[in-house]
Each structure stands twice: as structure tokens, then as C-alpha cells.
Length: 456
Ligand code: SAH
Ligand code: SF4
Ligand code: F3S
Image (cartoon, rainbow, N blue to C red):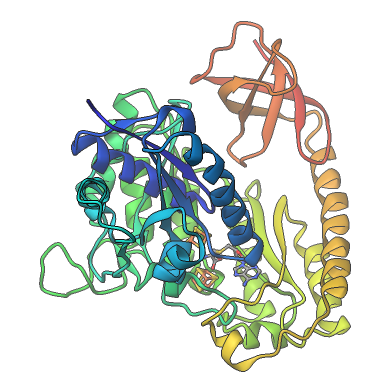
């Protein structure tokens, strides 16, 4: 009988995209995809290692699954993704109910690993634990058409590159994901086209720093180590040309590489969404230097101005870290100041979390007390709340083209969708259907949502 896997995903959009690649690899190998943990012989936890609390959540979940394994003796748990890569077999020593770990570049080996787990059981080989954690300089899973998991059939992620070698001082990603490499453009465009033909109306192109797509020499499809001829703006243009009804988004843009060429391409195509995620991390030049971000606040503000010049209606969102090594009150104030200047539409805000193996772990003290990190973070959150509400109030009275995504979480009588700026609009159903574009007028708002009416 066919065995089933259930994949549980934590972390960033790239991890969610990876889970769909994993589902494709395992489906092809003859495994079924379970709908829930109850409906599976293997539970695969695709994990994140970006901050300590992300890892604690996974540890908690793994221990929770132990109870279920006591009831169902054939149920096996494997840990995949960034935490598997970071901790390797250490994780299996620490969590005895984990049977195998598999890092982000080894997913093609999963069918073999699952088979090996069963074989070990048959042979009654005890404590034979499996770890596949080798990183690759070439793996992009380019040829694998992902199996879309729990999607809405309207918007999908497409992974366009893997890894990162920017080595920001605080960040674990270069160690968990390996060297940066770009997927060949034909397979990306092919995947986007196929999604459009299946009825999808929005794709998000994913990479840790999409602006350096195609600039890292290996692996060229020519196999000669030369850089690809297609850079990120070129790729974006190719995907935008598939159909004007197909929206294109992308994440993440590293501010150091945000080019005028990218802005020109965006401005030229209305179906490239007016939204740029531009993580700043700090508003202090001293902190940015210490973080190895390779730009200054002045450079960043110049890029923000360039975005607004090219597309006055473009929304800008960010990531920020509170309480990085040696951050003074002055540095923190500089971050608040920057937030007041840029007026972000949305921000992901974090407390600094020391990660083993990073430059900061080796060389910089984690010297801001936890309570003080929390206090600074809360100050940023409060300010951003005010800014978001202020921004949203300016939207009242405007009309937007909205891609309808589904029923609103609050009421069955309402639908929700997003505008090009990635803002969520909620409105009474009327005759609107998910997967179509409709005009919606904004009547009121909260800091997080715009509330509107269909325009006939
Ligand atoms: N590649 C993206 C970021 C990916 S990680 C970029 O460079 O912009 C997502 C966010 O997590 C980062 O932008 C950063 O704000 C946050 N982050 C990363 N490492 C962190 C750490 N050690 N502690 C707290 N936040 C961290
Ligand atoms: Fe981490 Fe920096 Fe790479 Fe982003 S660019 S993933 S923050 S090392
Ligand atoms: Fe987390 Fe790995 Fe993404 S550490 S943020 S899942 S790249």
C-alpha cells in the first residue's frame, strides 16, 4: 500500500516553495501527500533557523509528535530545512524521536532516505540514523515542477535562486542555505506560463536577494561557468510578458543592489506589482556597518526616493532588527527617525537573536539586555502602527484593481483580495468571484486592512 507523507512548513516563503518541491519529488517516487498529521506515515517538518524562537517552536512541535508516535508505531518524523542543516545529526541526538534530517540541497535523496528508514526497521537495525546535509553549489531543482500544497489556485511562489553569500553579521542563512546560485531563466518562465494556463493570476519570484539574480557565475546553462545573460530586471520582464492578466511580485530586494534598471522595468509593466520589500535592518550607519549590510542610510534613502520617482504609488515594506550588538539609544533613535522618513506600508520587526556560527557570534557581544531589546522593539512596533494607520487613512476614497482571493476570515458575506501595493481589501461579496480582478473603492480602514465596496 502507498505510504503517505505530511509536510509541515515553518519559516520564509522560500521554505514554503521548497515544501512544494519536496512534495513533487516524493509524489514522483510513489508517496502520497497526506492532508493532516493523522493521515500520514511520515511527518516531514521543514524548519527555519533564523531566530532562536523559530527553532524553539520546532523543538516543541517535535516533542508534541512523540505522543502521537506512541500511539502509532509506524509513524516516523524527519526534520528538513535550515534547522536540519544547522544542527545536522546533533538534532537527532537531542530529539530521539527524529529518525532522519535532510538539508535544503539534499531533497532529491528523500525517497531513498524514507526507504532506508523502513529497511532499518525491517532489519531491526537500532539507532541507524540518517543525515543528508551536504550543501551544493549547483542544485536549483530547476527541472522539478512543484506540487502546489494548500494553495488557493490563484497565487503561487516560484523559487528563482537559492542560497546567499552576503554574510550579514547576524544571519545564519549563508550557513544553512549555502552559496548563491540562480535557476536558469527558461525553466522559471516555463513554470510561470504553466501556472497561468492552470488559472493562476499571480506569481511571486523568490530569492534571498533577487537583485543579484543571474550575476553569480555558476551554474550557467551553458555549463561554461560564465554569468547568465539574463539579470533580474530581464527575468522580471520575461515573466511580466506572459500575460497582462498575470501579476508578478518578487522578494527580497537587498537595498545595496536595487538598480534603476529594475525600477524602469517595473514602471513599464502595470502587471508588475507596485510593492518593494526593502529590508533596512537599522537606521544607524554604525549599525549597518557592523551588520555588514554594505549600504548607508543615505544610500538607502536615495533608493527610496528613486522608487517614489519611478512609481509614486509604489508601497515599500521592510525588515528591522532591534538591539543588535552595541546598539545605543542614539542608534535606536536613528531607526525610529528612518521609519518616520520612509513611512513604510508594512514592517517585519524583530529582536536580535544571536546565531551560532555567524560573524556576530564569533566577534560581537550580544550585549543589549533582553528587556531593553523588547522595549526598543515595542517602540518601533508602536510607531509603525501609527504610520500604517496614517498611510491607510490616505487610501480612503481611492479605487483599486483587486485580485479577489477568497472569503474574508471575519465574515462569510465578505471577500478579500489584494491591490497591486499588496494591501488587503475586504468588501461585500456581490457578484465577485475568487481569481478575478475587480475594482473596489476604499471606504474605511484599520492599520492592517482596507474596507471597501465593489465598483460595478
Ligand atoms: N535576505 C533577506 C532577509 C532574509 S531573513 C534580506 O537580506 O533582506 C528575514 C529577516 O530576518 C531579515 O531581514 C532580518 O530582519 C531578520 N533576521 C535575520 N537574522 C536575524 C537574527 N539573527 N536576529 C533577528 N532577526 C534576524
Ligand atoms: Fe541573511 Fe543578509 Fe543573506 Fe539576507 S542578505 S539572507 S540577511 S545574509
Ligand atoms: Fe528561515 Fe531558512 Fe528561510 S533560516 S527564514 S527558512 S532561509
